[in-house]
Length: 68
Ligand SMILES: [Ca+2]
Ligand SMILES: [Ca+2]
Image (tube, rainbow, N blue to C red; front, side, top):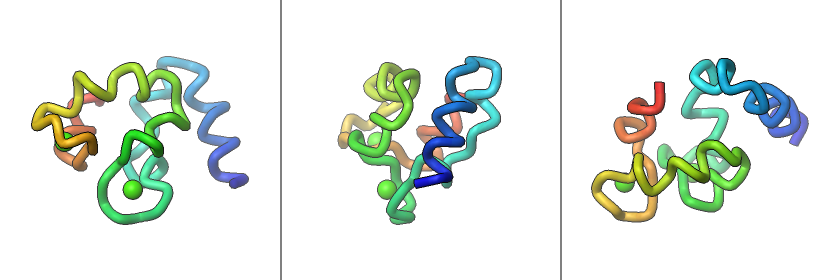
């Protein structure tokens, strides 16, 4: 949880967004970012549908990498 708060603080600056890595968003560590996990970051939540190119409702590491 502490990690999440730090992440939110980081993400409030758009320049810092790219520096936030995949694993920080993958809260349950299953290797994908679910839509629920993406809600932790307003910017990521907004980009989610655009990044989810195969439209399976989850972001793979490969899909997420396009944000950087
Ligand atoms: Ca996950
Ligand atoms: Ca996907």
